[in-house]
Every structure is written in C-alpha cells, then in structure tokens.
Length: 410
Image (cartoon, rainbow, N blue to C red):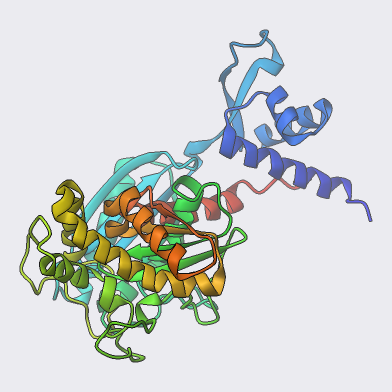
C-alpha cells in the first residue's frame, strides 16, 4: 500500500533533517543528491522546514552560481540547549551544548566521600544550572546522565546498587523533579560505547564489544548497531564474570573473585608493583577502593592505574613484563566474551584502555588469537575518559532532535 502524501512528506522531511544534522550546512542541490529526491520535492521541503523554524539560510556556496540553489541551509542549532552529565563517586562533570553538539560551556565539581546525600545532590544540580546559564539564554531541553550501576530497562531509572553513593540515585530523581527538561539516564559503559561508535574507535563497526577498564570494569555490547542492555539492564557486568586466577568465585553482591579482581584499577596497581614497573601509584593504597558491591564508578585509582600503564610504555624494556601480564589478564576475560558473541572487534576503553593505546591492544589481540579461533580485532578507545560525557550528550541530542525536529504536520 503506497504511503499517503502527508506520510511521504514526513519521511522526506526527516531524511533531509538527518542529512543536515550530520553533513550540513548543505545547498538544495546537495540535499537533492544525498536524499535522491526530485528538485521540486526538495524545494518544497526546504520551504516547509524554514517556515517551521527548523532550518535557516546560513550562507552561500562559493562553488556555484549565485541564486537559490547556492544558499546553504543549516539546522537552527540555538533553538535549545542540551546537557550531558558524567556522574562518578568522586564528583560530577557537566557539558552544555547546542542542538548540533557544539560545546557552549563545561564544568566539574568534586564531591568528597562521605558528603551527605542532600548537599551532594544540591551541589551537582547547582553546577548544571550555573553551567546552563553561562552557556546562554536558550532553554535546556534534554539532559543525558551517565552513571555507574544498573538502569531499569522498563522505567529508565537508576537502580539501587550496593557500593555506590546514595546521592547518585537521588540526583537523577531531583533532576527530573526540578528541571523543565527531559532527563535520560544511561549506564556509563553503554554511553561510552555509543560515543566510540559515533565518534571514536568503532566508527566503522556496527558490531563490537567495548571493555571499560578503569576504577570499575564493565562491558557494552553493540550488536548490529544496537546496544543490548539485557533483560534486567545488566548486560556487560563482566566484573562479576568468574575467571581463573582469582581467590574464589564472585557472589551476587560482591565481584571480588570475578574479572574485576584481575583488571580493576586496584589489581592493575598491584600488578605493576609486583613486576617492578616504572612509575608510582601517586596516592595512598586505600584510596578509591571498591565498596561492598565492587562496582564503583570513579575514585582515584583509575587515573593512578592509567599513569602506571603510561609509565610502563615509556619505560621500554623495564615496563614490558607488567604490560604483558596485564594483556594476559585482559585477554582471559575477553576470550570468554568473544567466544560467546563473536563480535569481530573489541575496544579497550576507560582510563586504562586509553592509556595502553595501540600497544596494549595489540598485545591483547595477539593473546586472543592463541586462545580462541574467532578472529577478533582489538582497538584502543579513542575518547578516553571523555567517552561517557560524550555519550551522555549524544543521548540528550537524540532526544531533543526527535522532539524538536519532528517534521511539521501537513
């Protein structure tokens, strides 16, 4: 059954808007080429989208003759603001951007361990409000929040997680109550995978697994271009994955004995010391230790472990024993995931994965080739610790575009 004229117009408008968001500014001729639509159809949709306040003329193309076809059309990016939050156990980072993702303002506030829930939440909300005011007068439309822990797939709410600060869950609820904006919360590792897929190491891959290696350990599964979150929102909780070489199996409330015990930041620091790797921890031994649940989202050990990896890389032969031992451990967990999913590509992200770069990725790939017959390319994450914030902003941007850039009714 052919589409009705109004449905066809809506489809064409959305197609044009998507190209303008991704590739703009564009001339009408470029829109015709990218969409495959006829010249009269493009002229009609351009007029319709301008009347709706969704696009505007932003310049002229110097490569063509002057005239209507030489006008460059772009999204009205300042129609609203977006915000992304990266919530860690030790603080909150915020970035505010326009509808095309251009950063307008950013800020970070530390929240010390033991800070009561009320003051911690107020500090985080005040940071977002102040940063949005600095960014400009446009209203805040959508806010993406990246947080550690499980996200309920039915409600989208951050679930209670042992070992994580109570203010995390209270913050999401307070943002939803106080802000006249759509608030979306996502697991930090999943958001990092979205960012690496859109703008990082996995741009050319629709199927891959991302390992987040930092203070916490997690995985994200991108299969056929879609995140797989699992029935309870817990897909990728590889910190709990039983592996050889630990003191014993993990439990339902504590991942000690799971993969976290081998490649979490505390374990990486201990491994570096055991192999006499170059560098120092740069902090007291107890800082940033996991809570009872073993799934912390921040702390100081992640950056410290990353520094030890960077020092080992710079130390040449002195750092090789540590790097090889670390690659052995990462490959042990990666082999279990790869053998089940056969993703073809593994991205090592988080502070430790980013610090290890191509060298660590190559070492892990070499070991995987010996452990599993499934060919798997291993890549270093390109976005580092900024991946979570980038992913949170992308989720906010998609929500805003779906709402604000919906084609006008016929």
